[in-house]
Amino acid sequence: MKSIYIDNDLEAVRGQVREYVEREVLPNVETWERERAIPRSLLDEMGKLGFFGLRIPERYGGIALGHLASVVFAEQLGRSTSGGFAITVLVHTDLAAPYVTNFGSDEQRERWLPGFAAGEMITAIAVTEPDAGSDVAAIRTTARQDGEGWRLNGTKMFITNGALADLVFVAAKTNPDVKGSRGISIFAVERDSEGFTASRALDKMGWHSSNTAELVLDEVWVPETNLIGEENSGFYYIMGNFQNERLAIMGQALGEAQMALELTVAYVKDRRAFGAPLWDKQGVRQRLAMRQAEIDAARELTYHAAWLTDQGENTVRQVSEVKALVGELVNTVLYDCVQFHGGMGYIAETAVERMYRDVRIHSIGGGATEVMLEEVAKRL
Image (cartoon, rainbow, N blue to C red):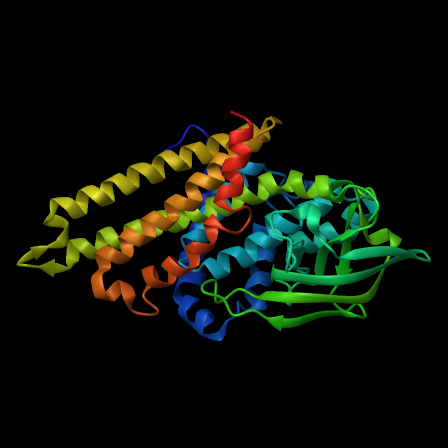
């Protein structure tokens, strides 16, 4: 379905990523699910092909596109039928790397962005803790000044790419005496830093091929040059990047919904029951048609929110609407897709069974539906 928001550059991105996913990813998804890992060689290759530089300025090896590009890119990753693969890539390109692109110093951009764009360095963002998720101001990890740097102590939970990343952006309290939102800073922590460990990989309902870790920071020293942006401004950086993060992940969700629907339409046109294809049942084809209409509408809402963000508008309401709407919709779509696959939809390693588990996180991670609806309600 054509959209007024998609120009020739974005159409080229869409085509190139889709072709790559169909050739290099889809045939290997089941293997990666069993192995609980995405091969680093794949990430290296994607970086060399330029897929990691869509949002990075040209002087650092990227092509400097906007939020719409992230959504289009994420949609095609979502079509891989592997949420674990898609989120591994998106955490690097849209959840973590933007902290340097948008808030880092010139020296930090020179030091890290070329490696991010080329896939030579993979990143992660560590905000969530055992007792602090959407409530970012409640984090307990601390950072105290020590010489020409900082000592970090604390635990981070549910960190995607946590044990894979070469560089992790860690949120920590640098001023415990003020309101939580005013005393948080972001630090770039290198994987081999003394006292920094990915203590355990977390076994999840879905996203089996992505690395999700608990991170422990025990007197981890980081130099002053690894402080991202201004001290005590980290909360506002996190809030700012949430819009980009949510748009990208909902792009992934839209790609997953569309792919699952296409797989299901093909299945019901072939699967015979009571002497005829399931597609001949009015109730089946009409419900799938309604799901397609909802996906088309949600996609345009997402594109519009991304376009407004690219224009510099304050889009907290629009992006929160997208996150709430698409996060719930993709779960509804996959419920119907499993239903119309019948018993096969319940068999492990069937694409829709895997996707059904993978998409459940979309109404939780990156801002739960209930939190998003409160953001919308505040602005009504």
